[in-house]
Image (cartoon, rainbow, N blue to C red; front, side):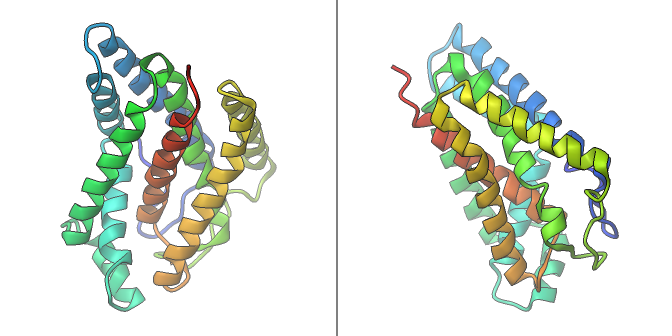
Length: 233
């Protein structure tokens, strides 16, 4: 299980965790895609897509999905911002989370089914890295709920340089699919920022680790849907 490292109830994510996050996502995506590709040697769809999906869940310990579920329960509740934060810290999941998980799984697996098995490794490597890279700016755009501060993780030269290099590398990986796929990079950042802004409005101007996780899974599913639109034949 590899979480959005560094975030706790009292402190936002640290620089080292933020820099490593896209690399971890790429590794998880590559391993999950390889699992799907391996299954494709003996089984037809939907098994390669289902195995790739299951591998992603297992390799992350479902930690980002759990953040998504907590966010559904908290952000969508018709209560005060403070009460929403309290709901998100409750380990139990309610109706919003159940409905959200069903919809998320349907869209996620459906997106994987549109990608040929032989492209799963590259597709999941890209989506895993870019989805996590896209949430990095959120730690600077919004204060962290439980510390009431904005992370200083990107204040030094090393993490900033790493972020820039990872963005360039991810863009080059996207171009492997098609030249237009480079547009997925700014689109992912824009979607992540929109998710962060919408959630911050519901939470009194702040974000939590659960929101980071929710943004990761939502951006990743959106990327897979976009990748599936590529004309493979």
